[in-house]
Image (tube, rainbow, N blue to C red; front, side, top):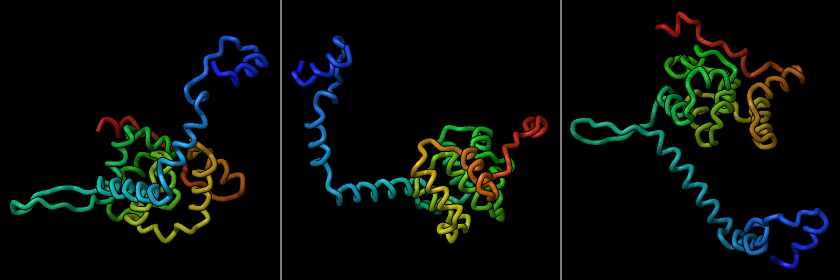
Amino acid sequence: MAECCLPFRRVYGKENYRYTFGELNKEQQARFYEMAFSAEQLKALEANRDEYLLSLLTVEYEENGVKQTRKMTRGETVKFLMKRSGMTEDAVAEAADCSVETLTALRSKKKYTPRLGTMLAFFTALNLEEVYRNELLIMTKLISEIDSEEYKIYLWFKNTVPGFNVYQVNDYLRSIGKSTWTTGYKPRSKAQKAV
């Protein structure tokens, strides 16, 4: 055992304390991480990750014997992201504090234009990466609202409150006299589930 560990063991009375590799080798690990990647390399890795994530939003199809690709529609993108999250439609609706019908409309109705709050609740429920958020904002023609106060509140929560949820944001919005992102979770009725 390293001599540096003895004062800790004496002060805290943990004679049998077992140190992790990280605790015993902090300095070496810090140097490794500093040397591992330069700022330019980290930016390149981030760009490649975004490019890869966007590539997942393409569909391959065959036309006249020639393989082609196209971007997913909004409905296909929403289905893909929900499937990727591993959540059922009801679970996503509950996490987004919206009705199942809202998700169905987002997924299937081409003419349906959601409110920004609805999209932010969807992003929060699925904890979407920025590249997917931006792509969906473009698809729903809400990208122009990226500078809105509502979006800034979303980013503030995303950057400062780890693991935040829609209910916390709605409570905050109520407390400052603003309208909430969503109107509340409404599960499917038994008749709808049977269909």
